[in-house]
Length: 193
Image (cartoon, rainbow, N blue to C red; front, side, top):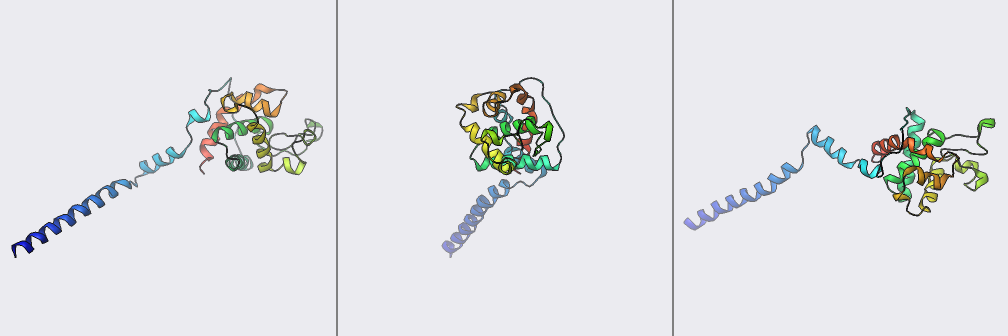
């Protein structure tokens, strides 16, 4: 009888110990406080050092965005992910589009048009970027821009304005730099949304 009682006590103690070990840590793994939830969201956002690895050049510009422009930001980010490129590529693409079109998918502007430039990146059908229908499609135009960026050897090591200029071949190559901070902020905000 003494042996049966001892086994029962040890069994109950063992069960209590193993339940405490299992239940204890699991209880501490799931912190549902608002601060913990905010910390988890922050951890998912890209690091500013990754988005702007070379620092910004010159004075930075910023514009308020409407719904269409925000939708175009999201389209650029999705096309960047589909191309297998990282957040820095999205920063370069968004800054380029901010300079070229203020993130508006522009059609032909008549006499105000720069040659036959259209779309988010002001790409030209006559320069081989695609048809008007293609370059005014945000996914297509972003993919075309990123394809050009991939062909720039060491683009990740270049300042944004140099990387963008090697793809765009603009008459105003240093204008891209002014949009780097806003582009990085937009990528940080929308990369995981």
